[in-house]
Length: 149
Image (cartoon, rainbow, N blue to C red; front, side, top):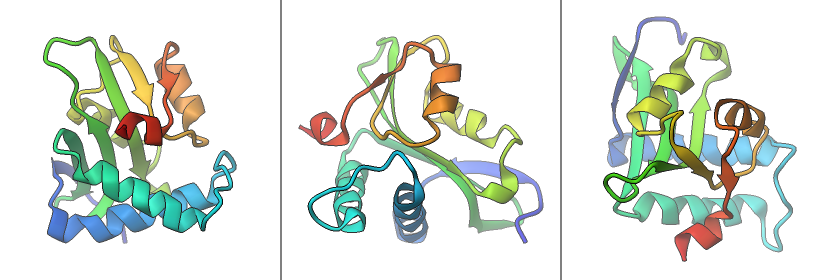
């Protein structure tokens, strides 16, 4: 079902938003690192995600099947920082379980201009933090609410 060559492309809000938001919320819901919030966690996270996607400097790239470009197998959401800055902001990276360990996340990070030589700020604490800390040992967590202020 998700077999085939993977290609990378820009995010298309009309076509991709529903899947990106739903899978991001679902990932956060099932993650052991997720905090309990006073309101429904899904509602809270959905509002944060909507706000992040609305920021003009947000970078979103999609990994999809070459012969079915509407079939998303992964995506990366980051933010552009000042030109020449040696830091990157990563909000979320996701790859379907069936396609993990193929280097898709690594390529998506490159598309979002996240470089191993950069200082990294990440805005969501998930179980992927081990992946982040391994690849970016000096990474720093900033709460997404604080980032959006």
